[in-house]
Image (cartoon, rainbow, N blue to C red; front, side, top):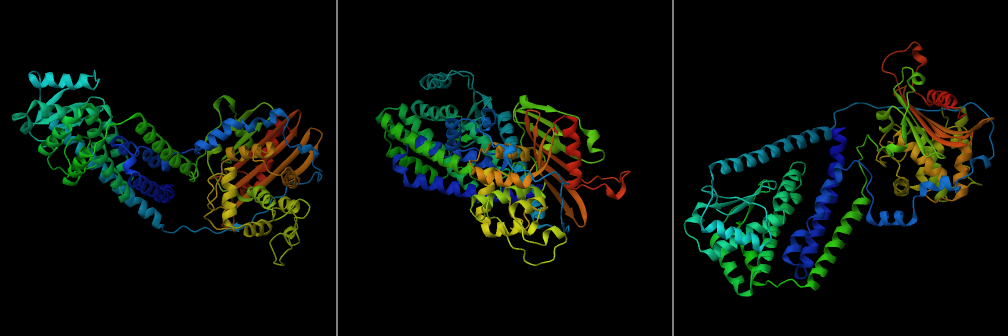
Length: 603
């Protein structure tokens, strides 16, 4: 689990590095158009990009959100009558549910990704220790500092607070361990002034220093420091992230200078620059520090002096221009994030609206199997879930993926509803039903691997990835190879996601060609009865000769209801009274599903 997330985290770092390079490019190209304040603020969307690896749900871009809001909720089609009429599909007759599977080999071996994940975790521990050490240093400085309680300096501080419309009490301390003024703390902000500064200062210069530190408070820079320290832990291995934090710190100081100079008259700008040169002594910046210091490196001081010398007061036109640049940059980052694959925790999916869910106890139907049952009633918009944890856990889809492999081939015109035959290559497969020419219907009914592998190869990996991304199929991970990504390999999906996709297929939320949807449903049709029609697809995961996963998913219509359902089971960990016949296969999953459906008078 951890090594899988680490590999995903590394991939995300490539995306994040691209975002940082984009921001640096925008800052360089539009430097003359961005005020000192927005040179700093334009970094803020980066924090969202840094969160991407840890977001466990599917992201929606702003444009996608607007589109959905404008067009309405397509899942309501089932209630408005815009649904596929499954009963109009010709019946193939009642017959035994077919379940064919072949075994795949899996060997456990040392994994270099696990080793690298261990190094990553060790690095995070080291960085955390350094951050705690920085916090301890600040605490020691506070213990050794003396509060300023009276005098002309306190009166000057109050005047500066009034000038910046700050009503909060911000105590000021003197410290012998600091070379530069600093603001520390977000919930309990404090200003620390070096003793060397207090021994000999001019009121005008001290006013500039206090205005600068109070501006750090107004900008909530202490909170930004905490956020930076938080991200330093997982991103310790990415030098571009650390460099961006260094630049962000520099831009923060420039932004404070810019805001202070907006308060001053033009004649005071020269004096403010002189104060900076006199008191902002050289200090090496560390992104692990919680303090917002006035000092900095010589290159930073030089940059700040140049910005002071070229300062232009903000106008409403410049504010609008800066806001537009910021908004477009943020939109680019948000939109690009929505296209990035979600780890969604590789193993866990999200749940539907709790108000629409009822949790049932179907343990008696599963006997000694570990498994789950999920059902969605399109007429009532209600969900039934048995075993909440396993219903959200992702597993290999095995042969249930063939529903969408066939649909993808139809949508890409590789086959048509009228002409879907593929010629058997003459290879002797383990099942007689596979050793002949196949159509989409026969291939779905007999779960013919070679037919869908052939379609996937024709489509190509790029088309497959685009299709599974469009429909939001599980973790959308096809890295296991074009012939086997679905067979106890990289692609994974949860029972909840299976049912949600069946619902969207039924309502045709993806706007596929209706005849293509009906062609797939013909292949899924299993049997008719007086109470309804059953559509389904089994899937069995056989590893090293053992059936370890069993699926049965589909629809049942009748009694005024159309329901989508999914059953998934594991191989039991202990031997049952049924002995060797107790295995987690698609056939076993279908038996459980039918028993539950009958108990609910749905079939």
